[in-house]
Length: 175
Image 1 (cartoon, rainbow, N blue to C red):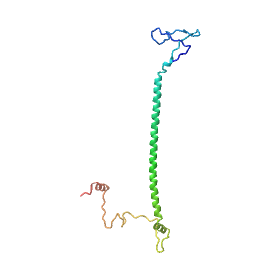
Image 2 (image 1 turned 90 degrees about the horizontal axis):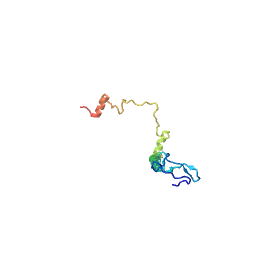
Image 3 (image 1 turned 90 degrees about the vertical axis):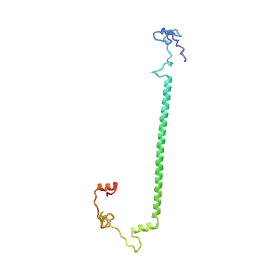
C-alpha cells in the first residue's frame, strides 16, 4: 500500500472509531500550504460486494465450468465419431458380402451350361430342339381348378366359418 505523497494522513474520528467519518474529518494543510480534503484508501473497499477473493473464486469457477463443458463436448464428438466408424464398418462388411455374391454370380454365368441355356432363349440351341414359349396374355389358373394342389379330385370340401378355423387352430379339433 503506497500512499500518494500529497495525501495527508486522516485524523481519527471524534466518535472513537478508527474509520474516518465525514462529520469528523477536517481540512488539513498540504505540503504547498493549501488546505486539502483527506482521501481514504479505496483499495481495501469492495466494489458492489466484489472483493478480490470473490472475483478470484468467480474466475476459477468460470474456468472450471468452461473446461467441463469443453470436455463434455469432446466426449460427445468422440462418441459421434465412434458411431460413424461403426456404421462405416457395417457398410464395409455389407460391401464385402455383396462382392462375394457378385463373384459367385460371375463364376455361374461364365459356366458353359449357363451360356447354352441363355442361348436357347435366342433360338441358338441344338438343331433337334423345338423352341417354344408361353404366350404373354395367358391367365393364371383358378384356385379350384382340377389338378391344382388346393383341390384333390373326388375330395369333399368342408366349409367352416373363420371363427371355427381359428378355434381349431388354437385349441385343436373338437371331438
